[in-house]
Length: 326
Image 1 (cartoon, one colour):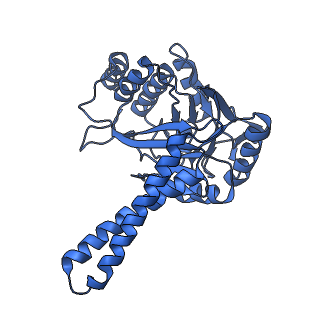
Image 2 (cartoon, rainbow, N blue to C red; image 1 turned 90 degrees about the vertical axis):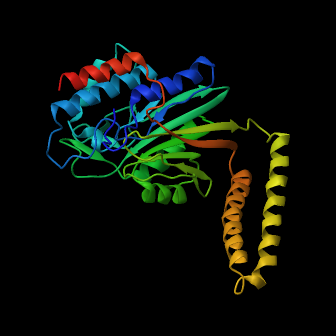
Image 3 (cartoon, rainbow, N blue to C red; image 1 turned 30 degrees about the horizontal axis):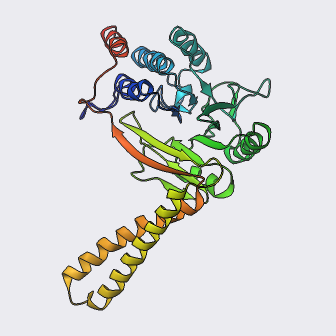
């Protein structure tokens, strides 16, 4: 579904077709969603329209068909109430499981989690723990509270590491970028954070302590694609070569910048070249830090879910039916 009138991007039907090719190639795919997938912003106490609910049903059925491994429940996902989310699970079940999770949403009557607090998956011998956090708000709905995200992040990391014995931890944070970075700074042990909550896009990941942070924007316009090469045990030999290469490139850039420094006040061409080298330096410094810090190597791309991508015919038919009925 797409909510952008100026450019027809997004759409779970396109995402499904795009991901399907990796599944057909027997790639070890993990699919996650950090939250606010079913509804956009709603003023407090304003129910989504019937049309918006039909769109949410299509998204739920499509996510189940795609076998998305974990969908964090975000604040806006609760716009139609908890009962409606349970209805989505029921309607999607014919096509697969709708794997909703939340580590900090709690029923105030029972003091128990409303959803599973984590999801454990294994790919190529790597055990991965996924947990999700919703932002605190007075507008979550009756008998619901979001426990403090930082406290729950600490609890979940400890549980996943010590009890579940996972190799890799992924946090799905419906908290916005600033709070997500704050948690990454204060809570060690999270390898990857995928952010939602506010409409911001990171064109390149950010490394905070030993955590790499991604955000692909809002509205389903972009798909964040991360290819991970996890080190089981010792880092592979090619990583030492890559570390050496990046270090030499950084040294080369620094030397060029030093050569240009005496000319900056008198030569505009030298000044422009110096600014270009500053950007290169930042890239190489970030890469060098990642190579020294992370237990994996990765490649990242933001894929525009644009009109030129093919559609999954079944999901596209659901979309058309939902639009026709409204």
